[in-house]
Length: 632
Image 1 (cartoon, helix red, strand yellow):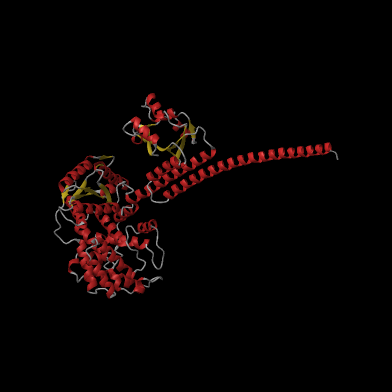
Image 2: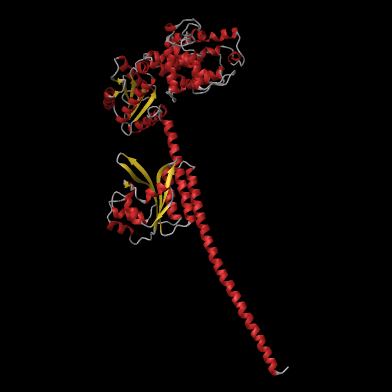
C-alpha cells in the first residue's frame, strides 16, 4: 500500500472516530439533559411529598387534639396557626356567621398571629378586628360560598376587606394592602349538621389554586366542622347533665357542687353567702284545676323570674318538683332578704294565661350568720320556707337557729342504737364498721345515712342497688310537699323511708331471695315484717315513736285489702301511702330473683291499674307526674 493510500485510510478512520465521538457526545448530552429534567421532577415531587407530609402531620395533630379534652378555641387556634405557618399562607382566619335582634353579622373565632393582622390592627386602631362586630354583605364572596357550598378563590382582596369592614375608606384599605405579597383570598364554607356555620379563610401569595391545595383545604375545613360538631355535642351533654330539662335552670347536682365550692371560697375569704329557697304555692290546686301542663307553665314561670333576677355569679336551681334554690355568693342576710322580696314580688305580679297570678313562699339562710354547716344551712332555708307557707304563703321568712333535734340526728342515733345493741342479727364486725361510719363527722350526715341504709338493704336483698335509698327519700319528700304536709311530718317520713324495711333482717334470707312462687305460709311470714320493724326493733327506741305508725301501716291498701290492720282510705297515714307507692315502684324497676327489672313506664302502668285499690287516685296522679317529669 502506498503512502497516499495509507493517508487516505487514516483519514477515513479519523472521520469514523470523529463521527462516533460526535454521536456519542450527542447521546451523552441527551442523557445529561434528561437527568437534569429527572432531577428537577424528583425535586418537585419531593417538595410536593414534603408539603403533603406537613399537611398530613398537621391534620393528625388536629385530630389528636379533637380526641382529647382540648377546648374548641384552642383547637381552632392550632388550625389557623398550623395552616399559616406550616403550609405557607400569609394569614388564616375562622369566621362565624351570627345573628341577633339587629340582624346577621360576623365574628372572628380564631386567627393566626402574623405580621398581616398586626399591621391591620395597627392601622384600623382599637378595637382590634378580632373583637369587632363585622358586617355580613349578602353580595360578598362570603355569601357566595355559602349559597354555592364550594371553595372560592378571589383576587379582589380589597373588596373582601371592605365587605366585612365597610367603614374603612379607600385610603385605609390601600394602606393595609400596600407592599403586601398577598395575591388572593381563598374562602372555604363551613357547615355543621347541615347548617351554615361560617368560613375558613386563607390569604395566599399565589394567584392560582392547585387541585391538591383545594383538596387539603377541604380536609382542613372538614376538621373544623367536625371539631365544632363535637364541641356542640359535648356542650349539649354537659348542659343536660347540669340543667333541669323543664326549666333550663341548674339541677340539684350542679347546685350542690356549686354550694360546696362556695363554702370553700367563703372559708378562705371569710365572706358570707346566702341561699334563698322558693316553693310554688298551691301547685296541687293548679294541677287539679287546669291540668299538669299548666302546673309546668307555673313552674317555668318561676324559673324565668329567677333567671331574670340572677346576677352572673348567682346559681338558680330547680331542686325538685315546685322547689327552687338560689345561691347568692358574697351576700349577707340583709341583701338576700331584699333579693328574695324582689323575686317574691315579681312572681306575684307575673300574669299567666288561664291561671292568672301565682305566688311563692320563700326562705332565706346565710352562711356564717346562721350556721357554718352546709347541711344545717339547707335545713334552715327549708324551715324558713315552710314557715312562710304556715304563716299564709306569698311571703319571705329569714331563718332562725335550729332549736330542735334534726331528722338526720334522730336517724343516726336510731341506726347506732339498732346496731350497737344488736337489735337485728348481723355480723359484729359489720355492725361495728357501720357504727363508726355513722359517728364519722367528716362526711355529710345525709349521705352517710343513705350509704348505711343501702348496706343494710343489701344484707337481705343482694340485688339492691346503691343510691336507691337516696332516690326514695328525695321522691318521698317531693311527693309529701305536693300534699302540703307540715315539716314535722316530712321529717318523720324521711326517717321512716330509711327504716321501714329493716324488719326484713329478722326474716330468713332464703325466704326473701326465693326464685319460685311463695306459699301461703311464706307470704304470711313476709307480711309480718312491718310489725317486726315497728314493734320489735323500733318500739324500744323512745325518740322514734312518732315514726312507728308510718312504718307499721306502710302496706295498708286504700280499699282495705292490705296488712297488717286492714285499715282503709283516710285511716291510713298519708306518709304510709307515700312509702307504699314508692316501695312498689322501686321494687318493680329493680331486678328480683324471680324476674328481670321492668322499665319505668311499665312500672307506672302497673301502678295505674291499682289506682283506687292500693292507693287513692290523687296520690297516683301526683306520683306519675313526678316520675314522668323526671323531677327527682
